[in-house]
Picture 1 (cartoon, protein in one colour):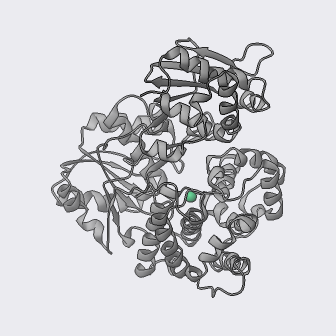
Picture 2: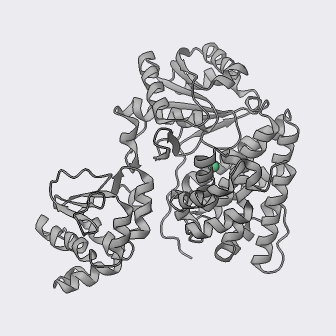
Length: 385
Length: 139
Ligand SMILES: [Fe+2]
């Protein structure tokens, strides 16, 4: 098949090694940063991770012009506006985000406002940012969202109960610093669910209608790495090697889905997150296998392609191999101690219909191999309840 | 050379498509979207707003050609040539956005929501152009 069009972008320089945060200051300085504005959250501050990064900045000759440490677990339009105002007052020339997806996405939002002026919502749209923004460096503290390399930011409007997504090839940070020592303290449950989020990015990117050859290559290896290392990272939290590889897997998956987008599993997870506050990774983990089953008739060959990455030996027709892949997804989640049913994740049965309606309208549904109506999604929710 | 020689040709062809679509089953889905979209065209400069947020009584949506006080949720900007190709179903949306041939201001969810809704218009447009004696524009 001759693909119609290829568009792949990843502008982020990725550097990784154990203890790399100790050189954060040197690296920020090398890209021309002299006054940093630090973005993070209070939990990471208490754990000493923010202090570690700030010490390194100062040691590398980068002044800390200011900080915003009040990023909530789900970033918000008003938070971005407040943080951008604080950064503007502080007058730095590089944003340094230390945290998970919410922190890094907040910094991306701030970067748009600080570089282009106006309000965050002015940049809701497609094809609006076509030139480099200010300098942004990201240090991920979870191995899940891959936000340190993605071209997108998801920011909630708490008041309106809507999630906005911003996208531009220039939203990706200039530098991602992958230091497994920054993720050592992550508890098993969070390690497992954020890791399953990363796995879902890779799997959904691979079967997405917008997949391309470059994202395919990244997705296949991401699945292999995550499948191999997630159980160890979950059960031996202080295993630096496992933590390193999970950061790599999440990063590769991020680069893949940032270009190929995702599908019905994410659409459903977004809906459950909005209605029941189900953690994103947990919802993805529960729904990944059912979502793949739903797509079986439309994407059996693509799902079967994932077999070697899951350590599954391809055998018989594609559909049979694809079923074995789906079983491998189930057993990985189980091995990591994650539940398989929505009722165990705080979902209420009487809210499923509303969740299905929301999922059918989610942007992610349009790149899912098999079209999905609210009725079909509801069947999947019920089966998984 | 541009497909349309002036704004009135844009309104006759693309504006006419939107009017013609009012009697097509797809208009119900546009009405259900409750979204107002403004298309800003260049070469020739022209603008069409399709407003399903505040439709006139008994109609699926309102159409305004040129300047209007109707407030759009989404503003799409492109050359009129690209719009013409788009309604003929010949534009890959992802490619057009990536190449900078189109841009959209407004909630991405709303934009994505509209894509499946407007697909039937790709068949309607060439048919309509033939009806108005402009089959020269259908290649
Ligand atoms: Fe995700």
